[in-house]
Image 1 (cartoon, one colour):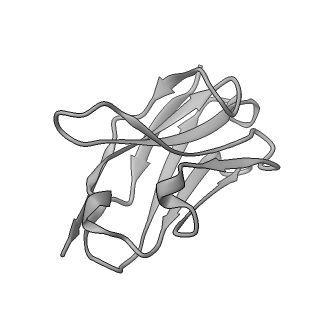
Image 2 (cartoon, helix red, strand yellow):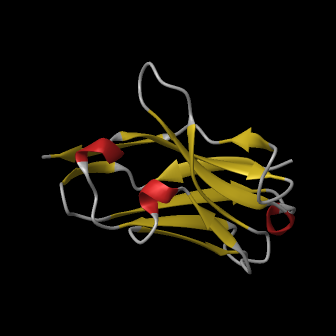
Image 3 (cartoon, helix red, strand yellow):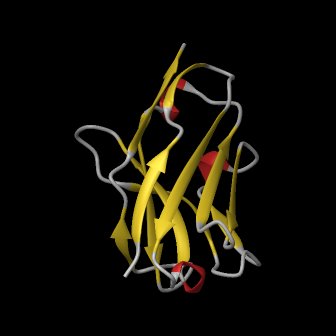
Length: 119
């Protein structure tokens, strides 16, 4: 079992940066692929980025390529999402999730952290 807690969200102006962190409890963190997803009210949760358990492979949604970077530190049981060049349309609640593989399924979720980008 793994439990996830996100942090690092907040209010930032367009063009700014934020780094989200997701701290995991449980000794099996390093065996999971980790993903970041986001959701705005009235819409479904959408995929943002994912990283293999070893960190050797990553995958991004097209709308964040070149702006966001996912990374992980298995020694710290933490996965990160560095977000640069933020746009107002990036405003959402961001969730981290643990899954069996890069493509999922993701079955462990954090509570989410709000990111708001002002224009």
